[in-house]
Amino acid sequence: MPEDFTAPPLAPVRVWDRGDPRPVLAVHCSLAHAGAWSGLVERLHGLTLTAMDLPGHGRAPDWDGIADLQDLATRDAIALAEAQGRPVDLFGHSFGATVCLRIALERPDLVRSLVLVEPVLFAAARSHAAFAGFQARHEAVAAAMASNRAEAAALFHADWGNGEALADLPDRQRHYIIDRIHHIAAQSAALVDDRAGLTRPGGLESVAVPVLLIEGSESPAIIEAIQGALAARLPRAIRLIVPGAGHMVPITHPHLIAPAIQAHLDAA
Image (cartoon, rainbow, N blue to C red; front, side):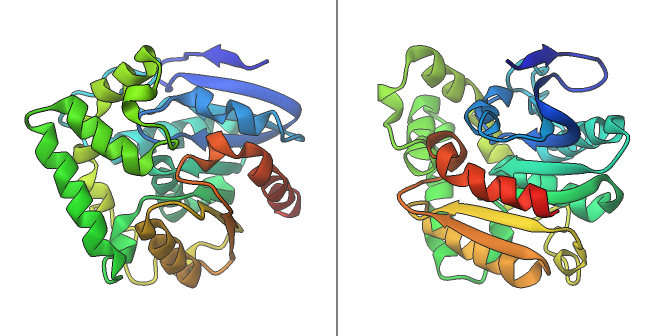
C-alpha cells in the first residue's frame, strides 16, 4: 500500500515501498495526480517509488497563475531528488517527462536513469510535418478556453485522454480536468517555445544516462515526431512503442510497459 506524505517545503508525495530503498522519483502528466502511477508501480520491484503532485494538482497548493509551471515543477522535483541523498531513477509522463528531461540537463548529478513516457516537448518536433496539425489543435483548445472551459477540456481530452469522451468520465474526474484546463495553455512557453532551452544545440547529446522512451502506437502524430527527434539525439536512448495504446499508456497499459521498465532499471 502506498503512503501519502506532505513535508513542507517539499511537494506532497505518495510513496510505494517495493522491496528495496533504491529511489525512483515519478512526475505525472498534467490534469492527473501522484496516484496515476499506482497501476504501474505495483508491477515493479526492487525500488521505492516517490510520486509527487505537480503544482496545482492533487494535494499541492494551487498555481498562482503567474509563475512558470515547468519552473515550479522542476524546482519541486529537484528538491525531492536531493532529499534522497543519492542519484534517482526518474519516471515522467507527458508534461512530467519534460520536467525529468530538464533535470537530467540541469542537474545530471541527481539522475541515474530516465523513463520518459511521451514527453510533450513539442519544440523538439517543430520542423516535422506533424507540427502544423498539432499547432492547429493546440490553438483551438486555447481559443475555446477564452469562452468555454468545458469545451476546451473536451477538445484537449479527445487527443490526450484515455480514449473516453470527457462527458463519459465520472463527475469528480471530469470536473478535476475542467478546473485545471488553464494549465495547458500556460505550458506553451515551456513546451512549444522551449523557454528553458532543452533542445539547445549539444544539450540532449550530453545526457549520459540510459533513457527509455515509451509511446503508444495510437497517440497523436506529434508524439512519434518528438520521440524520433529525442531518440536521434539522446546517446543512450531505447524506444518502446506500445501497440493499441494512446497517450495515457502508463494508466491504460501498465502491464505492457512494466517488464521493459523493470529491465531498464535492472540494467541501469
